[in-house]
Image 1 (cartoon, rainbow, N blue to C red):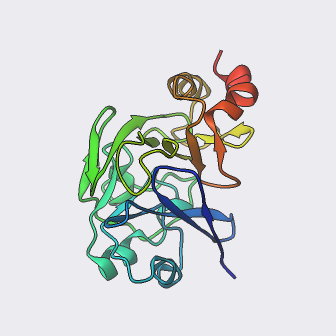
Image 2 (cartoon, one colour; image 1 turned 135 degrees about the horizontal axis):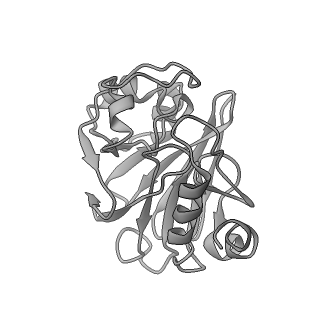
Length: 222
């Protein structure tokens, strides 16, 4: 059975639905008028039940692994929301390139918006900055939002970190497209963000940049 909770203190409304065998965090993020779903794992109807009366205006995929995009195609069909992914991993998500031999199969999905490092995705009043963070996969990306917009402009900035940064650890680098060196460089980029930034990882508990500065960055981002 899916578990769900909300995260307080951020500059936008954040709901989390935990789904799948790997207990993925499926995020529903809203500025009060516009809503995006991050990394739909499975059970699209469960995700939509958590969305409630809100519309789904965008679907964001942080990378091309089955547990982060397994429900993207069906959710896109149900909501007609555009799918957003990095230009690199979009090739696997869409089926243009095969799923690597060490990856699990998933329903490929058309990617409507392909982004690169430094791009800004405007979703409602939320300008999310794309931070390409290879290491877990070649096209892994994080999204960063500064607290100037949305329902809670005084709240903390938000980083959607996918499987790059977790509470107390980092994503695996031994999959196809993974790289220890690239992961280290990606973490150095994230380490410059403000300490109060709310970090939304693909698995496990939310954390902050400040907490991980003492734990993860001190070890992996030297």
